[in-house]
Image (tube, rainbow, N blue to C red):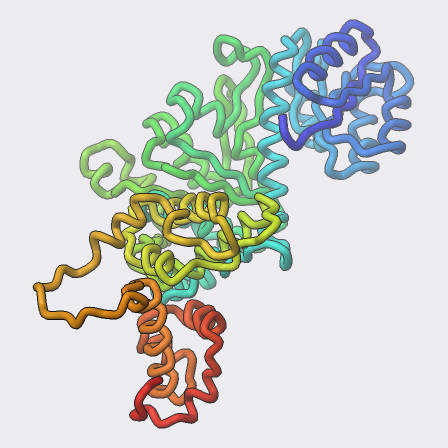
Amino acid sequence: MGTLRSILVVDDEASIRHVLTLVLSEHGFEVRAVSDGEEALKELNARPYDVMISDVRMPRLDGMALLKQGLALQPELTVLVMSAYGSKDQALEAVAAGAYDFVQKPFKPEEIVFTLRKVEERARLLRENRRLRAPAGSATLEQMLGGSEPMKALKKQMQRVGPVNSTVLITGESGTGKELVARTLHELSPRANEAFVTVNCGAIPAGLIESELFGHARGAFTDARTAKRGLFTDAHKGTILLDEVAELPAAAQVKLLRVLQEGEVRPVGENRVEKVDVRVIAATLRDLTRLVERGEFREDLYFRLNVVQLQVPPLRERRDDVLSLAATFVGRFNRAFNRQEPVTGFSVEAQAALLAYEWPGNVRELENAVERAVLLADGAVVELDALPERVVARKAAAAPVRPAVAVPTPKEAEYSLKRAMVQLEERFIRAALRKTRGNRTHAADLLEISHRALLYKIKDYGIDPDAEGALDPDAPLP
């Protein structure tokens, strides 16, 4: 089950303790079961737990009092409250006091496991938020977004939009990093310390999407044996990203419009509404205006979502980011694979292949290619044979076809194209540095590569930019 490990079960019924201990242990949890609230408090004082599953009616200390005292001891504890005598009012009271969910007895143990899977996803999202805010030891958002001119323009827009509460529509091809843009907007906002919840609207069956987004009442449909919170409730005070929002069915579009207009959700099967304070960010790779024209997407919802639109450019339109992004991914996968000899960079030929490829899968495809390269690289430098065949083939196809001309026959030692390319690249770099009097930024512009890539190459070739800049730019190169 991943990150959730320790579960504290609190119930005065031995049969409930036995069944939950058995079932949860089979799913890989470490379970400790006690019979009343006071024993539970002793456990919470002694060690940390990920989740506490507690009955309401118990001797000595009831479940509601245990809920409040338990959260005081361990603020990050997730609590599930269960009762055979529960009412809607009691469920609302439990959730208001800090419980994650309220479970009605009798229940199937598998329902508890299903709820814990949702708890685990929530914990993963919170952990990811903390990772993205970590200042050291991991790739920063600035590195992940890139420093090309198109991305500089996008980041300038994000700096303005992030701190306000406006709804944002992020558009762009698959794999361009729309979710990363949304996370960055969340990090720039006053909601940064609250939940960031993502939901892929196209990955959830149409019959379940309303329940997932807005929750449902007990008995709202077949197998709805317990009430369930929706993702909008989970995102209260925070941000929700509706990825692939174009895939929302018509009924869910109506309910989403109500959330945006009134700030309230109505769980499936409920007459009551819940107030929520959530910033909505939507993302799509489809043209919503065309869907509106065809009647497949509500026009009023489109205008509510499209208060501010951010377009994420494809990677082929920001090639200056390719090598810097690849370097960031190298660092990530060096750590992930714990390589004894970390990869330090790419050969000249591998760099050329990365730059020549069109990247139809955008940043996601580049990330996958670098993961493969770090895994397969024989040494510290990634060579062509460690890159995917499609990337290498594109480089070969991009090579210009020239008419046959008389070429002097080189000596045997001079046949190496690899050596010739390295020598030519070094000469161009030295020439650019002389032309710009050692100015790295202007030299990178002349060479049509990123500033970061130039710094890597200067280091690789052992070039002193200041020394080169002091030389006559018209003097012959060595």
